[in-house]
Amino acid sequence: MSVSAEKADLLVVGGGVLGAFHAYHALQKGLRVRLVERNAAPCGATVRNFGQVVPSGLDSTWQAYGRESLRIYASLQSQADLSVRQLGSIYIASDDEELGLIEELHAINRDNDYTSELWTADRCRQRYPQLRSDYCRGGLFFPEEVSVNPRLMIHRLHQWLAEQPGFEAHFNTAVIDLTVDGLGRVNAEASDGRTFQAEKAVLCNGSEFRLLYPEMFYDSDIETVKLQMLRLGSQAGVDIPGNVLTGLSIRRYESFAQCPSWNAIKAKEPANSFAKRWGVHVLFKQEVDGSVILGDSHEYASAEAVDDLGFDLRTDINDYFVQEGRKIFDLPNWQVESSWFGVYCQTDQPEGIYNQVIDEHIHVVTGIGGKGMTSSAGYAKSSMEKITNDQASCL
Image 1 (tube, rainbow, N blue to C red):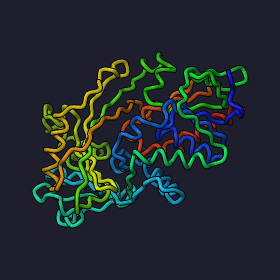
Image 2 (tube, one colour):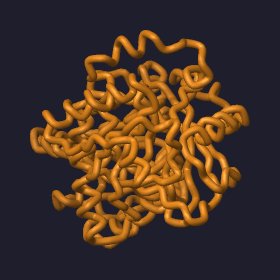
Image 3 (cartoon, one colour):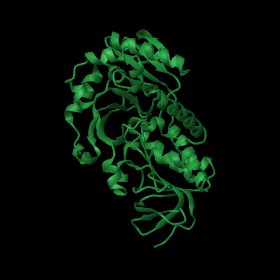
Image 4 (cartoon, rainbow, N blue to C red):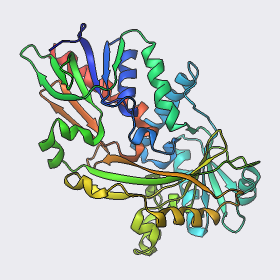
């Protein structure tokens, strides 16, 4: 059984967005970092999402992490092309209730010193000429927000990390056992017989941490969520800049729950609609090649029933995306080129993420929910502060 030649300060298990940004912040602190990823490259929720970085959709605590993420993305993009584009986000209101909610959120963000702009329907259509006038009543625009290409960003981030001193990555490396020895060192055994040593370890591997700590996983309140989305073909002559979120998003996102009229509006919504049943809210994001990502839906299962989510893609959900999308935009191409799903974990814990410490040296940080692309960069900074403070207190 071979041992990694140089003991690291931090071992990161999981190469997705949350793990990669833990590695990034550890390097910023001058730590030696080893990252291990069981696949040849991340292939879970990190690459199966919209790539929308939208702090505007989060509650006040997580919005702060998201706003820090915006600063981190900007810093990294200035050093390497991670596919970050600052084109803003807009919420399109389709009726008086949604118009009232965006006005209330605008006031909340003004008090929080987070820039947003109330737009008339005409101004929305100036920026988005294909936006249907019978849908749009107005919009709330967040100019600081960005988007990334999720299928590119994490790979380019790994490339940047690989160029930094003190970093080493091991892909196709599955950790099958973690122990803490009598000297307080974490020993990670990989399936190929290698062992890695570090002062601390952080597990950011989603529901896969059940392979290492099954009892902890199944006893937790972790819920798994399956999202379905699709890609429309290239839209000739059409430019849809930034992140476009619509009325169903206004009626779903956490930030709007802070609005004074939220409870009364939610109480009137039908409980048995298709959108409610499948957790649909309609989002648009155009990629550089002109294609448009459209979705998404949400199906839920408890930790012990994760396999019940299945692997099917539902045609009726895809049909609903297109049906509702046509009510919002007049696009020249509604041909569905591909469809897929992603699975992430979430938790009801007060912090909004699953965070547990094992044997004082192993930190399980997972269950960030649908906030991963938006908040991982900012949250990982805070998390690494805690991990390094814990390490210092043990010395």
